[in-house]
Image 1 (cartoon, one colour):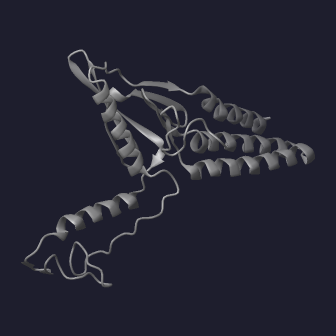
Image 2 (image 1 turned 60 degrees about the vertical axis):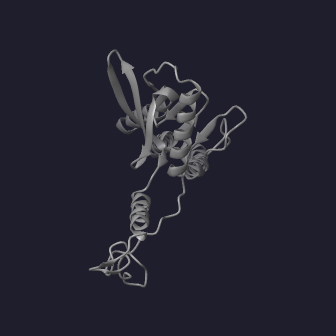
Length: 241
C-alpha cells in the first residue's frame, strides 16, 4: 500500500509532496482482496461459460477501480506539479500556475505566453474533491463573519438580527436557514492543498522571477487505458462466444 514520496502533504526529504485520497486507496485494496478471492474461487471451481464471463467482469471492474481510486494523485516537487487523473497525466511548471482553487474538483488555472498573446488553460485534479456542502458551509461562515461586526437597529433586530429558530444566530435573522454543518472529509483537505500549492507556486516565482513559462504538457497514461480496454474487449468476446 505504500506509494513513492510523501502522502497527503507530508513533504519527503526531496521536497516532494503527494496528495491523494486515503479513502480511495482503502477502497482499492478492499476491492483487490475481494476480486482476488473470487477469481481464485472461479479458477478452482468454475467449469462453465458463465464462470469465464464472471471472471472478465471482475477484471473489468478492477480496472475501473484502479483508474478511479488508486491512480489519481497530485504530486508537487521543486519544479512543478504532476496531476495524475484516471487516464491522463498533466505536468505544469510552477511558473505557469496562475491560480489554484476548487469547484467539485481541485482546479489549476494555467497561464503562459504564446507570441504576443497570453494562453490560458484549466486543469482539474480528480484526486482532490471539495463537496458542495463544504463550500456552502464555508460561504455561510464568511457571510456570518462579515456581518458579525455590523451594528445598529434594523428590521431584523438589534446588532445583526434576532436569533434564528433553534436558538442560533443566523446571518439572515429570525427564521433564517440554519448553518449547514461541515461534513467530515474522508479524502484530502482541499483547502490545505490549495494553500500548499499556492504557497509553493508563489515561492517558486520569487526564487526564479526570470524563469521561462512553458505550456502544460498532457499525455495519455496507456497502462490505465489498457486496464479498462483489455478486460472490456475480453468480456465482449466471451459474451458473444
